Amino acid sequence: MESENNFDLVIIGSGPGGYVAAIRAAQLGLRVACVEKDKTLGGTCLNVGCIPSKAMLESSERFVDARDHLAEHGVKVEGVGLDLGVMLARKEKIVGQLTGGIAMLFKKNKVTRVEGLGRLAGPGKVVVTGSDGSSCELSAGKILIATGSVPATIPGVELDGDRIGTSTEALAYSAVPEHLIVIGAGVIGLEMSSVWARLGAKVTLLEFMPKLLPTMDDEVARLALRLFQRQGMTFNFGARVKSAVREGDLVKVTYASASGEEATITGDRVLVAVGRRPATQGLGLDTLGIETDRRGHIIVDEHYKTSAANVWAIGDVIPGPMLAHKASEEGIAAVEGMVGPPGHVCYDAIPSIVYTNPEIAMVGKSELELKNAGIPYKKGSFPFAANGRAKALGQTDGFVKILAHAETDRILGVQCIGPRAGDLIAEAAIAVEFSASAEDLARSVHAHPTLAEAVKEAALAVAGRVIHI
Ligand code: FAD
Ligand code: NAD
Image (tube, rainbow, N blue to C red; front, side, top):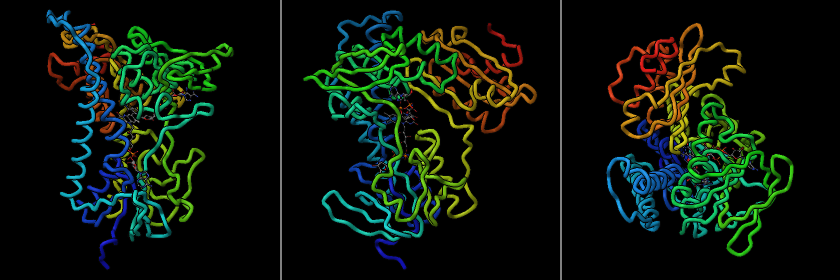
């Protein structure tokens, strides 16, 4: 029976998981509704994540270039100054264009947008409560949960949405902090520290583990640390934060240092960036007996089916890396699986990128993972210092490292730190997805002079026949 509130598929959440799944499902002929509690579509990624952070990273990088680097090119610029208001407005404009773009894509694909908080209310039922308190019930043949994640917090540090905040606040500080204290030297910590350090803030990072980006390849992490320190960031590793207490416009952070002694540090802004947790609160998972793991992620099978009939889940709300492209690919695979042969995501070929300067990117396995799994490997690496294009750009820090199986030569992992590493890793991800060998990459013609030649040279280095070093 077709009625206004009767859908083949109801998706809860319009992030890169939910909105992409909605469009794909509509392409496949399903009558689709997408429920979103926020005023704009696009989820964390478009509103307060990937897009605004990259806009601020790009702008702050331009500022540093103009201030510190254009002179090296013989370009004279005088009186370089910062207009933070314009920078923030530019970011908001980009966000507005992209979130508005999704609304248009929904219209084009006949996806019904339902504004309000969605809650499971028994088999095939989703109740949506609007911001004005009104509610409606949607009937759904199938339900896809794509509610994403929210920032994790730590005991003793209460967020006040102002001086003590998350990445959402750090994307919109109205003035450059005097001293920004960042708790967590993971991806958000490093990206946001980069933005504000470039714009003039003193930045101190307190990291619980003994290194930055704890899961990152050691060689890459060591070089990254050196370069970030050179950019003025201060790192305190092994720091266990106990409390953050507001004192007027300042915040006093107390932590146990690596040596176990108690230390305090005072700043005017604190960014808590200690990971994110799945957003399932109030979703009504219990009404359908949907199982979660001990960290609260919804448990799914290889086709993204939850433990309840006709309910699927994808993206940050299920286990795995919290990345926009992972969420989107899972969304596509899940809805394709609903109507036909299951789609597929190759988890070994999901690239991850940290958009600092230099960028850091990786795909596949790290050396440590290969060692721990007892997989024999060969490695080849190539420094950007020997790449002509990197020299022309004036960005020669970093290297590409390729790990290939010692017997089959199949590429198992690629790590890269250097200029545009995030773009270069696409080639490596395709190589991993297509089970390419290092020899395949090494024999592929790469245009000259490009940064991508460093990838080819690293592949040549796997076989001990690198040309340019
Ligand atoms: P989300 O994007 O979180 O979307 C979930 C949506 O569901 C939200 O809109 C939410 O309002 C809605 N929702 C939740 N509960 C309900 C409910 N009950 N009813 C209705 N709606 C609901 N990833 C990258 O790959 N690259 C990056 O550069 C990158 N940068 C990031 C920078 C920052 C600062 C942050 C915080 C994250 C970043 N990420 C990045 C991670 C990325 O944003 C997430 O992995 C991605 O958004 C997850 O997509 P999702 O669709 O699963 O969930
Ligand atoms: P993260 O997991 O990358 O880093 C969190 C860091 O905080 C870790 O280094 C951890 O050791 C540290 N930490 C945890 N508890 C701590 C404590 N009590 N005191 C001090 N340090 C502590 O998480 P994040 O940076 O918050 O990012 C959240 C998610 O968003 C990540 O999963 C990431 O994939 C995603 N994200 C991705 C991008 C990107 O792809 N470029 C950018 C931003 C965010």
